[in-house]
Length: 102
Image 1: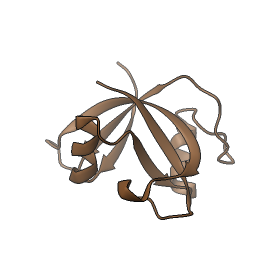
Image 2: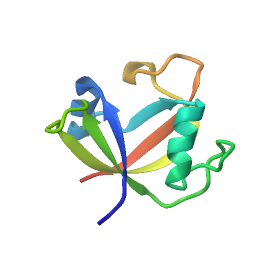
Image 3: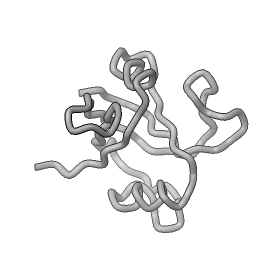
Image 4: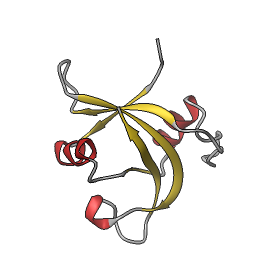
């Protein structure tokens, strides 16, 4: 069994990722996300990104037991996101660069 991080995501972004249109997902740089990414070895405890190979995570549309989900392979960076993909202009984010959708 592969342990993976499960991230909830809105339907609009979920559909765009599944279609290949959206190739990044964003999370605010806050202690909550730092801790979650730290638990799977993507950042150190201070929030600095650790160089890594693509990592498998699960994106889930909603919280329900039967919510649709997709496994993706990602590389984490810190950068500004694209406004058309939900990022606020000029704000840094944890950027999950999607390199493969399973």
